[in-house]
Length: 62
Image (tube, rainbow, N blue to C red; front, side, top):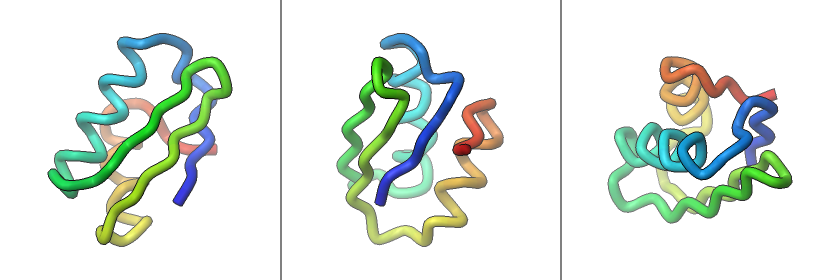
């Protein structure tokens, strides 16, 4: 699945986004691209759980 995160603008943001996703699914494969402001995720977790985790840390997907 893919998320567009408008306020993910640097490597620190990408690490925070990755940690948030992996707090829901520790085995998730996360590929964050701050330049494009997108995140590709391979996870068995439901999308809404990942959205909630991202929103909690200030990176709500658009």
